[in-house]
Length: 258
Image: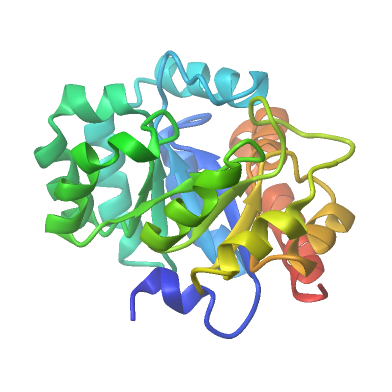
């Protein structure tokens, strides 16, 4: 059983996102073990990129801060290697096709495996083209996480049958960011998946309050929160660890109460 499968084995999972290197690598390195301690079941680490097309302004600005702090993909690999000695939960990279191809896909996946990354999310690689990345992931034992959106409709069954790790269910159209209301029929999306696969479904995009987390987890296998955490990091900078961990504890409790 993979680490990602284990994260969903007994309970609903709370998945937390941080932009690697925001506000600097030292803070990210100190934060990740504390997030795991606070209750995050899986941590997504965003690789900062100058053109993150799926991200709203909060994560775009975090990417800019991380790039200004001289964060590179190599430095992130080294940081994850050090963190992996302290945490046993799954660590997943969130990135885009360009940084992977620029680095060299085979070399990128090899480094992921060496440093202890469990999975990879690449939002701008369509399901139909994923083989270009997936073959290299499979060779290194990295699970390529697929995404489905409210617009996926007839493609949901096809994607669910092939999915690895967990299925990232996008709650809302558009880019990442905090939303006051989530209006998509998530239950129907999850129902479509479960008709063909027992892959865990986690809901992301727009979840920021314990109430939203509880609602989303009640119709799925877990909740993913990114922008709300990144906003706290933007607000508190190097002093973000305590506020972020308090928030994670609250959100994890809400997910477990679903």
